[in-house]
Image (cartoon, rainbow, N blue to C red):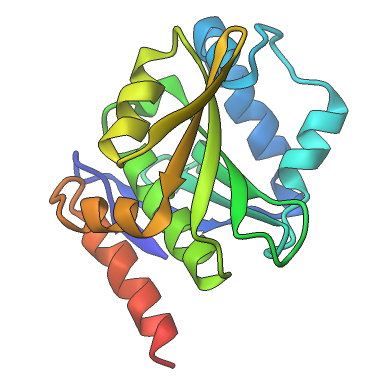
Length: 194
């Protein structure tokens, strides 16, 4: 699906595929050291191959993954990616993670990706997501709390949040920025009505 960011830039939102390995690696390399640390709990410039393989192994059942691609750039780089991973197809909860390349912070990429993932997860029978966030990751904590998430546990340097999908979708539906959010909801409503 194609939509626009807050600055009018065109963006493609689509499921992650094995063929996205190079785009994913380049996106991770473009994260600042601080962003890599906050996202992967490690400052390594490149995650181990097993992490890349896990991020690419999206089957649409146990692992939902959506990426945002910058269509205004001829190279069409990755802007960000969002994941929901669960242990079995009947599980109503999945582990939520999101990463947005620093150059695209503040443009609504995270909200677009999150809305897309939440709608997909809801269609797959999930009712909430769990997210582990470092205490010091204030931006991620503010983001997830704006979606209604609540702390349910803490473990060392991390907090575990529970995000109710229906509540988060209601909050996102009420937002007007980025304008592309309406496109995301319209896309899934169209798919559901078929």
